[in-house]
Image 1 (cartoon, rainbow, N blue to C red):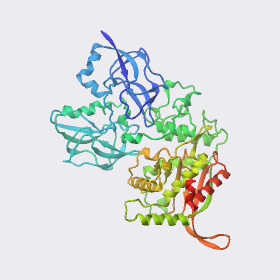
Image 2: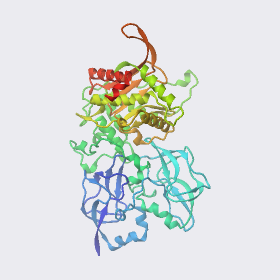
Image 3: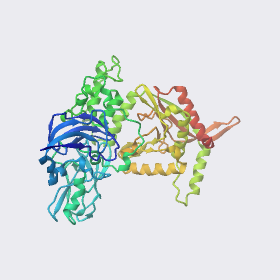
Image 4: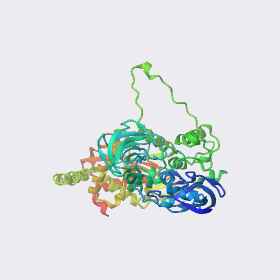
Length: 563
């Protein structure tokens, strides 16, 4: 006898809703357990939702472009009594994210523990880590003989996007470690062997309750709470509404069911460059499109001057050709030492190159008289020297002044979105932090709601986290305006590169005592050089000059900040 079973979306972590970007089955298809049904996309990752049981698809309840969340019905499948009874054996249910069970949400992805014999040992392996083939182990947090608890962090790994900690799914005593610092690991790699304490059936329950695909079945797709190894609260950030990933294909002949295979970060990168992914050939596994494929496509379009793709910002006929990068054998001129670029420098280098090439930069330079402000800063630090108050830096005053200037000139607190200009009503200020691995830009959220002391404390804390390499992606997202300060090093002026999709950035150089004419005589004043780079597509020169003049006025007399 047959029965109709609804297959639902399982727990997808901290996302209220995700968008269906591909439907992989049709009515009448015969599907197997673990077969992928739909592909969905969140702000962090794309993922395939597999079937919890096999049978014949009777009806589809979703289509491309729909928003779905936990518990939403994907389709109805006609199975046999044997299919319905199969999950009761415990094995199929453990290997697939069965939506009907609706397990409790787990805030972070735990390392998956392989089933063990009663009272025996378990191998803890790396869970699904999203779109990364391999990640590097940068820290081992436990040692052999340690007693660990479920959800305790075991190792720290670093991807191209962020560092993340992999927690344990079971508790017990560590018998042996299988990884060390510097190792490359991927989904299914063994981390350690643990002697499970207590009843093994109970300890393995958390792992089976998580909708995580096991390592031997690479075609089984992950769900969001298994692919995000960052604490749950870091996924909540004030980001602008996302553009539908399917909207770019409205003018293309590509069926929505056959969207190009690319990660969310690559899709976002392509949208920023105006590239239609349907016209890009992927070089990754299963023809997956990588960021390098997108860059290569743009370079080819520029070099050949050919017709621009649908929606592209590269105008046809305006291509240019340049000489190839020189190939030099430096060793023949003397001793050399070759070191690989850090991941941060590789990523930031590509972004800086894109921003410099694609944004028409103009820099306005001005001087701010901070004589009185510096005296106030020193006075505050002297008063708080014996207390717990943070040390006040000039950066805290600069952030406060920038927020006031952004209120007066809202064009600077905006972003280009195609032919539209998006004005933001929040004030998240990024500041460049120099780290041993390269430049990163932590973001101070809601800077308009914080005082100078709060800003000083938060910038100091974020700078320390950045130097330790522990910044999460959410701590570097959502910025409206950035500040790059070289005041502690030197220089008089420079041209900071705009951090897209922002439209301006403020460069700060070292202050110096200079003679300033007051109408009667020259007076020694402490002058701070300011270099404002702006996107000339959005901001004209007169507005930029007014912004800088207003900012220097605030810094010269900080009392104006309350007006």
